[in-house]
Length: 178
Image (cartoon, rainbow, N blue to C red; front, top):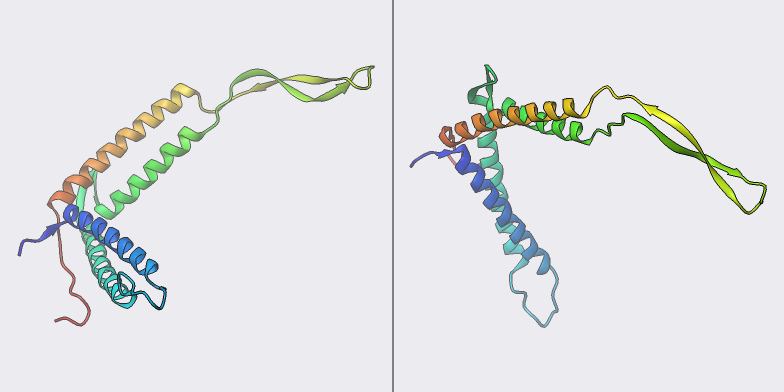
């Protein structure tokens, strides 16, 4: 039997999760029924299938986790496990989002500072003041930092994907089997 790669295993995990969701929905829809009608799917049988798929999913996800923790790749001028590279991807993505979400303000603007009442008691006028904003990060610098982080993300992601297509996943035996 040919060993499955990490990429193949990840696709299988996605299929198993979809299968579990479908079976769980089927069980939910058939948990109760009118006494005079038979459900389309037996609740207990469907729940048993969910448990079987869940067990396959746990074993497969564990196998991928082991492969990720024990396979070393070379990226960013050093060696690291796939697991570490995945965490670096996540943190790089978070940093890109954080930088992109910063509210940069620079320059002077007039802002309302409440209201003044005119001589006519029914009429009020806004009080205005000037506020000058300074920023520690200018827009061109932010764009350059985000671009550099996106390039870093691509380098790490490419290394992970290359390893995922060639790294075999060792199959874990199901509990109770020899």
